[in-house]
Amino acid sequence: MDATFKPARVPWSTRPGLKEMAAEAGVDYDRFLAGLAANRSDTELAAEFGVETEVIYHLRDHFERYGIHSIMGQD
Image (tube, rainbow, N blue to C red):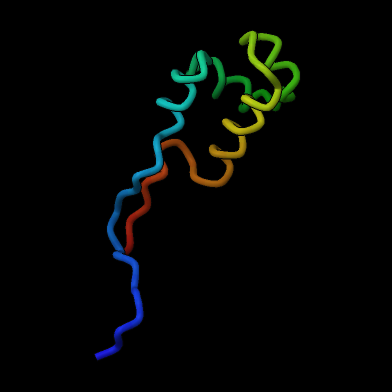
């Protein structure tokens, strides 16, 4: 039997979802997604929500890397 570590192939993640991350940062989730859909810049969105540009950058990065809920299944 191979003793090397093999990660579980489960359809969930411990990473928080985008909605929870946005709420924690004080960013309206629906308006944030609408801003992404409208291709607004991080600077524009940061000004709208009254947060640092880095906050929007990290939320956008999370969305682009993991999607909304960070949940993927293995079929």
